[in-house]
Image (cartoon, rainbow, N blue to C red; front, side, top):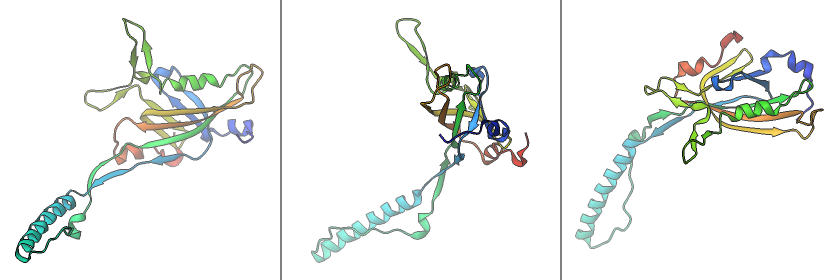
Length: 219
């Protein structure tokens, strides 16, 4: 990790990352360490093309059979045909918005332990376990549970970056920390870099995604 100007970091609220979840008990705060890559994608199919091609190929095969009977010649390879106009894509759906936040925590005061924040974030990707009964039962991370109607979900998180980005109703797909070899007086790592991937718990509309980006930098 490159050298950090601590005073500059603390003086720049727009670089602060806050990850909130009711189950965390408190917001986990750190600083962004790189560019934010945000992604969305579509799925398309060509139902008309595949249906038409199968129909034309069957018709051509039958015609070749008639020619083979009439001429005594064999036609081993049927032709393949397709009309351009029927090769149009048909939209079949959009994927959930997904993004990865590169961030870091650093020990700023005596007694700070950057591992504490990482352990809190691990609650978002590792299940909880119960020893009740004869077997161990696993529960989803953060008690995740979508509503029956699908309009909301328990156990989701909120991510805020500075004054320009705030995304709600997210699940945590991965948390990948890398601890520094340098340590502080209490023997714990000086800093930890993380790559955290978030994804919306359901497909979202354009208007919902647009609300993630707080235009004008307003709070």
